[in-house]
Length: 377
Image (cartoon, rainbow, N blue to C red):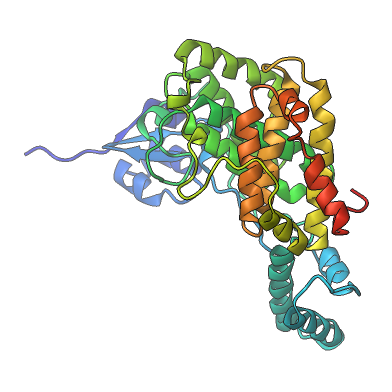
């Protein structure tokens, strides 16, 4: 009578792992080996065969380990803020009560307050340094020889959460890589928590990538894996952009009918004018969020004169920066975010035209300055 047997791909035996050694020495059966595999082990069962992940696959598929709490130093700084005028009366009163009770707080109450302050920080867009995750993360074991990449071809969607099927779109790939690059620069200039947004955009780029572009896929997988492993962004745009441009030429996917991102969201228009509704949104922005937006607007306008052609790195940087700006205010200023998105889509082929037509960020900067929200940008 035939039995259902579990198979082991030969590459598994190359890993320096106690369970593999026990399997080789006969101390473990194949079935016992399979049942002892835990989260963080570099193995995947596909069908009846256990495969070894490559190092890039292992780190690219691993959890990012996001921490939601701010550091203790930032907690102390935020709770010590005197000017709470940007908060609602209820939230400002809560912050004052926390500050008053902190000296006599028990450890458990402190942890609870730390979570509450983290939520207020997120609600009002207060820039802080997020405390890095402290727990030990699984590490890839030593290997004898190389591991052949097999799991990526067998396990689709392993790098990102399952989502609705999308049409491949090179414009979207470029946008997400550009956003990842812009955020990676901000990350190393004082905002280390942005590394998680970099991870998200690299994952989005992989999700949008046409399956035929294996070289670009392997490159982005490596960038994602290294970023997750090092907890430091690795987005070498000068090396990635030629692969994106080659992909456009090979697939001719830059026509509008292939570009989902060119389609307006239901109920919205390609609105590029700054309207009264948007001015009201800008007026309601917390001061810190407004200053961050003003700073990015200033940078975007400084980039435009550097653009030489639509393939120029400066054009891609401008595209990514406008994407980051729109993402940053989408939840609190949706009309303004949609306007920024529309300007990006309309002028991304040549940002110089935005300035010539009067649709750079000078109107947004002027509005923020009028409202007193763009000082010291």
